[in-house]
Length: 340
Figure 1 (cartoon, rainbow, N blue to C red):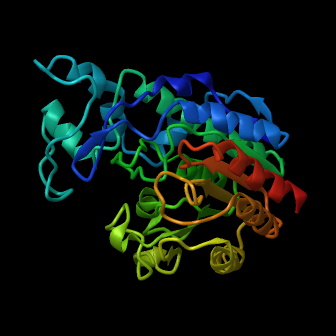
Figure 2: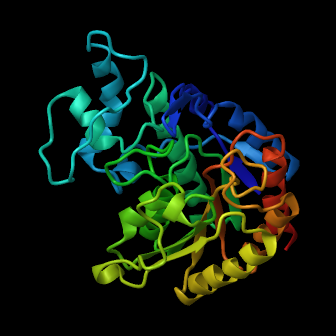
């Protein structure tokens, strides 16, 4: 299996993260790249650099207003007297229908849903090449490859069409699925991150041409809280094309695999030609977020089950945070898939 990564993704180095009113270092550290690279290499992956497909695949899902914000906000922030080193919102609109301000502070609040997505000097460059990594992976599958791994960092599944959040800026998995769709392939997105892929759901919620399925810790008391509940099925033409499978905190391998069977059945019944796996390794029992309790061998079983679909598969990296088993868990998923 080939893997894709661009060194410019190192440039995003967030310092700010607030949890329960306490400011802490961000869990989304560049060091994740080192550990994930080791994990993919141990699984036999050969790394290649992504090609630059331009803004088109990004703008297919993200509004030009939002792209303008992401490209320019850091430079604008520097003109604010006494501003902090990163762009962090401190006010939010009550509704997406509220007025769009000219102020950099107001626009930050409009486009950044939480304090977990600070924008620094290298954020746009890293997010752009993270998206291009996913696009290149999609193009590999469209050209006939059976599987590929996109080491996307920063991750993407919490990014809506005009909103950053949860460490995410551009929705890499969604961008890849849309790229595959424009190549004439019927794409399903299967999200196995411990957190619900709320941005992905939001982008495709009223559409019937891309299926979205997410298995995650129950958001009643877990991020992202407001999305990811079982009754969210889509709207309009999209009704029945979104499936959420929330699990109780601490769910382990066997119960997870039974739920994964339900998800895979839905993908098969969609008639998918290709599957984009939003691969979060933060469902691990030792991950800092402590949402689910998948073991390292359990990730191998997840990979093998996904292979059972018999579909071309693009793994797009989402979560999975710093613990000594992070790379091993990636190796387990990819070798489990390849072995099956």
